Length: 337
Image 1 (cartoon, rainbow, N blue to C red):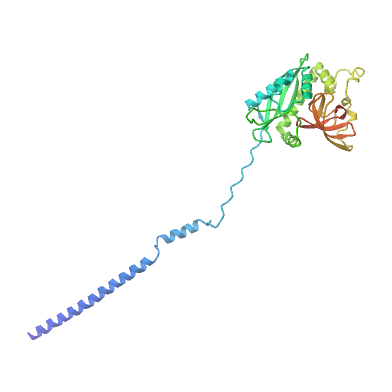
Image 2: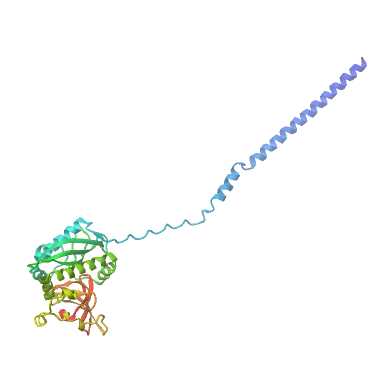
């Protein structure tokens, strides 16, 4: 009996000690859990760290780097356009009609300036012009916005002559400032001359001039009456093949033929000293403006009697460099007033 009591007491003491140890373990576990929570709360989330590193590796360009400047767009090409501006085509057609008929009153409404001398020159010119046919307008952008440089090709029908004479002129059409567009008819300043000269280097523009020159020559070769008329007013003799050339009649022509008919008197290049002129004058007779100081060179255009012209330089070989309606060329000095 006594032994049983001793055993019971030992068991109770063992249980009591176990409870104490168990309580201590529980408290320690609670403390460890709390410490772990505090530690995890102070650290950055593990999921965000690799994202930041990934973004950093994928985007090498930082905010400190300046953005790349956009590439400059190339300037639009100033293309030669054929009959694409209805209002310009109509304006040029009116201009041709007024010139052909000598209608200077209506012409004044579509040009910027028209002097009394120019009016008289237009009337005189109209005395042998019947009409301008097959008018075609080839445009390029002008030096200012909404302006145009127009290369006008046409067939000039002369009175009492069956074959028309192809020709080409260059005109400047100003912007429409509310009162309609106007064609420049006065003197051309140096800046405009340089601008047009640059446009004339375009292969398409050169092809226009070459085509008109070839057809002009062919027209004279096919019609003796036209060739005689052109020779009379300009001094130009059509170049024909030897087998097609008419018999020469030297006794009939010397009095009427201008000095420009003598090629041997005019060298290809102005080798002699040039005298600067830079003066405004007029042509005393209708004359060819040529690409070189030679009667064998191509014709740029016709300068009609009384028209204003700029004498740039004169040479002691009898030729002068001139500017006429925006085009450069050479004429015999004796035809300048």
